[in-house]
Length: 303
Length: 303
Image (cartoon, rainbow over all chains, first blue to last red; front, side, top):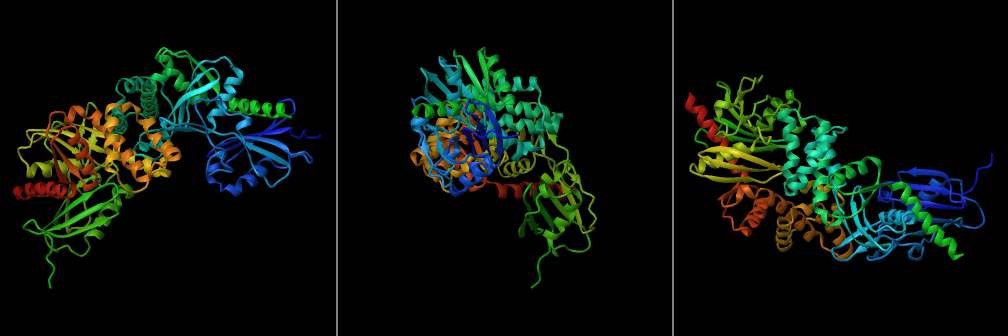
């Protein structure tokens, strides 16, 4: 059995993970590989070895294989800086990508830039490629895209461009509070949809009370036996509710596409639908790959 | 030179530290000792050895020495549980204290209870003794006491009783964000009073935007070269501003006493005075000792 060698390679290089897809000439995924060689743990000189190790022996000899990369590998502390494009702009494509000076002649790597906003100051790296993927599949979309995650992004999309966006540290706050705060004694893995919804409504009505509501999870655990599952769902509801209250100018009267992993997109969908907002869900990983495929298609078109 | 032996011993036993004062018959501090044997790192059987090690050889033989303890040593996971008193109540005194079954006959230890509130659920352990100390020095105080710290407390005081209180996780959020979040790259030790005040006003006007304002510290660091000192002061201003917005029913039209360490009380004073609220500052450690002295005076009065 001969293994088909990749025509090109798609890479999503985040802070904590490296995701690599070996792609066929026809755009099929030959293989997908994930490693924990995230940008956060690498010095600039360590990116190329980490990538080659993940690709393994799957490289053809002869012509260098195109590698299209998105994410934190393009940050100032990354492999090679791919300076941000400023909104309003279409999600950056291959024309804006920065070519990496790789040592290994078998690869020809390019990093797609992130997107910045001057006022208020904001940045994204990686999400713009998911937006590109979404627009590749929904070319006439006009509305709002929400990308929940460690740093949740809300983006206004019009005429194929990112018009403005705003980042919320909701996911990081949730992780810090669950893992490192006094609430780690009060939450356990699990979910309670009713507790989530009630806390979300509460936080939307009174978002300023967040820091007090947080401690109530601990106090109710001590005094009333609040279960760890309910506490965790309420914590999520409080944080997402406060975010939805602040992001109201984004979603009010809009159609919203939520791009993310299945667990978190379900929570955002529940929160938004409770406000009467029509929601489309899309899978983040799939759209990242679509965005990288669009960029590669532009590269092919240049040949 | 003969060392004067203690008449009684005052103990503030928190989660991270153990503070011990050796007291003379006349109420003078003979010696103060601090160790890192906080409640958080001790099993129930380890409290007595930790206390004896800190007191050292300073115990007289004969009559057991009274030891009056406040703080987390009285929690369920502590030395011996001292069940909460429920508001409205005066700060618990010696009549509510729980006697500890110590092995060493040279000590006679009692733990003061914390205070709980049923609805909304809330708890304190340690702060009630600072309140007792404040009321011992200001017996006719009627108003609000704010105790900033890891878990900041706001308490309504009337006719010598704690009427109601509310806890905010502000201090813990600040520490988590400075030390463990993406903002750790953006803040450095230092302070900028103007940045603090501006962020505090901003957060009070729009408290729901907290999670977005937090990320702007990172983005402005990347795009605009925001300094680490300014970022840290703004982070503090955002968190304290959000708290003041939520605690408005506590401080509006009240006289407020802020009890804490000098750095944090100055920040709260600045924030409250900007709202036109008259503020008295008091030192937390001094008031803890005053509260323990009040409890010991009750014990003596029983003899």
